[in-house]
Length: 83
Image (cartoon, rainbow, N blue to C red; front, side, top):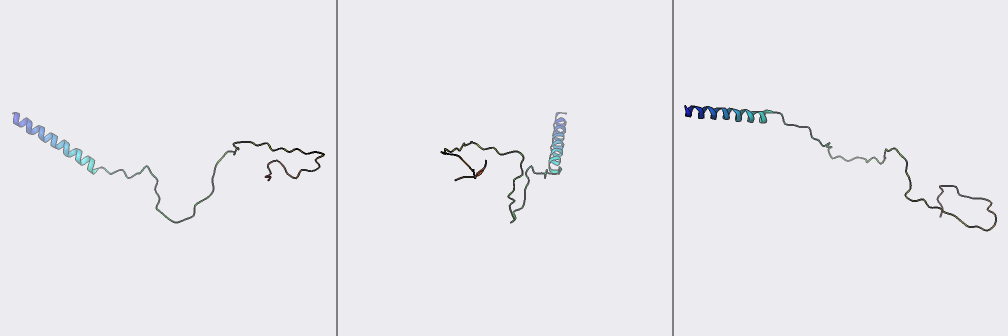
């Protein structure tokens, strides 16, 4: 009787191992990659940035002048570039 129990246990383990191997080998492999890929091609690079918001300068600079006499005309306005 002991020999029959060992043979039965061996057959059960063999069937379970075969079923597990069949399950892993027969199941379709996951083909979905978490990465988006693109084939290498020659083309133009788009040089436009799409964003929302406003630009703010890091530092503000106050530019002033000292004049003697009356100032009759100013040829610059706020935001103009001066040298």
